Image (tube, rainbow, N blue to C red; front, side):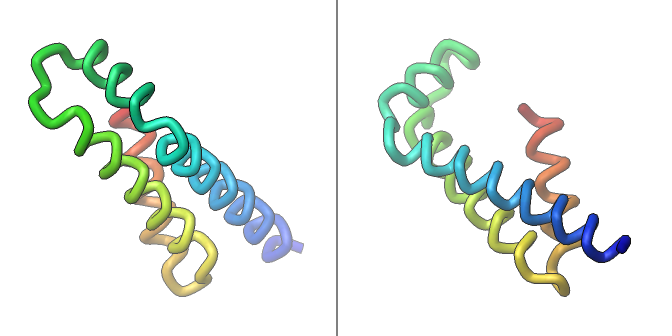
Length: 83
């Protein structure tokens, strides 16, 4: 039973990060403006949006592989703390 719960939580967070990345890639102008408002004067706002999306995709992939799941969980937690 614990494996079922652990896998369910990992799949949920993989879906969550993949969906967040998809939103960033579908509307990059919105996220560039959002980052520019969050961090005024950020010179690489467009690049930061793409990097955040790419990192979220990487986290989702890490969460799907049981051997890489701890790295995905740690990276995901650090990204959420950064947000």
